[in-house]
View (spheres, rainbow, N blue to C red):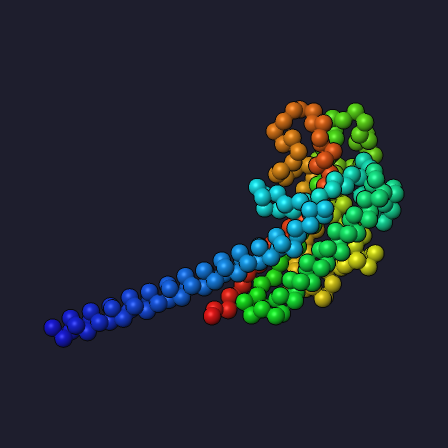
Length: 232
């Protein structure tokens, strides 16, 4: 009888410890979820300037509010008058860089001042998109691009535009998101999705898309990376 009691007590203790550990993990996950929700709400407030950014809830991402159109096959923003169809858009791109700098500076301050955010960092993705103008009778001939397929070239072109936007901000002393100052808070990713990706204009529409030029745009993603959460 004593043996049975001891065995039952041991099983009870083991189950109690298991439940305590499960409860601890659940609390940690709830805290983590709370932190993520607070971050997302903060980011939504910070990026609420609709003259600069446009939020796409379906894809949970931001695009630049203005369609910045490049001259066909161009990407080099060091000469906006040659690269952009509307060179005055360079001022708009400068303003978006200034605003993003303020946002990332705010995230850095929050990280340093808020215990729950000490182990939180972010992926800052600047993504370029290109227009599929292969069937457009006015697009530059293929051999003026590069010795690769048209699709591959558009991946290269869209990346070059994202990289050129980063260089534009850096070289004009607006912000350098890859400087050591920001390494603790953001990981910078520059990417190009060619004429692929989701949320494109006329994604499933007519064979000849009269809005295809609008797909020549920039996407901005600030994605939180939540590590260990400091429990109360």
